Amino acid sequence: MGIQNTLKALSDPVRREILNMLKGEQMSAGEITEKFDITGAAISRHLSVLKEADLVRDKRDGKFIIYELNASVLEEIMLWITELKGDNSND
Amino acid sequence: MGIQNTLKALSDPVRREILNMLKGEQMSAGEITEKFDITGAAISRHLSVLKEADLVRDKRDGKFIIYELNASVLEEIMLWITELKGDNSND
DNA sequence: TTAACATTTAACTTAAATGTTAAATGTATT
DNA sequence: AATACATTTAACATTTAAGTTAAATGTTAA
Image 1 (cartoon, rainbow over the protein chains, first blue to last red):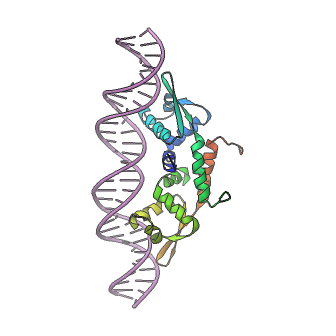
Image 2: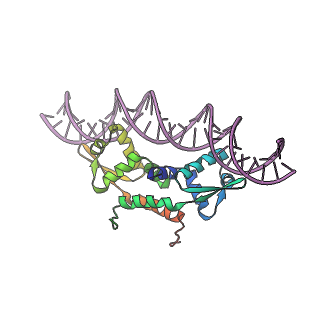
Image 3: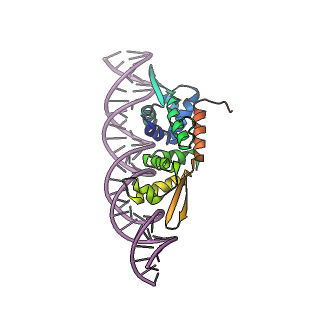
């Protein structure tokens, strides 16, 4: 994990869009794929990058694999940025 | 500009380290280079990526080119993350 | 157990990113 | 003006990332 994986995952626009789609609701890989103009295989790899970064969680539901957002990892990024900005009110 | 450039710039560990070094003080390209095990040319390109993303500003001082942090761009990232996390207290 | 469907994994291609060395640019010094 | 110094830019090699198609895996239903 770590900030490197997280920022790498966030640096791709398709992956950011996926995260945004998962904000409100859980979705299957197929539903996610429908929203893009790239193949399911490509989406699947994007999902695995997001999973690697722990930005999403997945679970199987019958034929489908359902993805949900895990935004808690982003706390670390917030912290890194906050420190960089010199807001050390919590040092 | 935009979130894409910013996150792309942040996704490299050398560039993040540069930003961290610039947190407290301004530094010349040469001083920055000294801290790494890669050539000045490589650092120079990293600096230009950071500049492109408006994460740093530069100015010439005689023979030297001095870099300083511009953390204000990170506000946008904070906002994006905040929205993703569903903290819509400011909608 | 076979067929159909959903998703992932593998093999491959292409494009982009990172590093190197060498040349170019700009400033200072003599 | 010539040399030295600081930095950037160009040309190139290597690695990494993102996409494609095809094969593999896992689940459901006939």
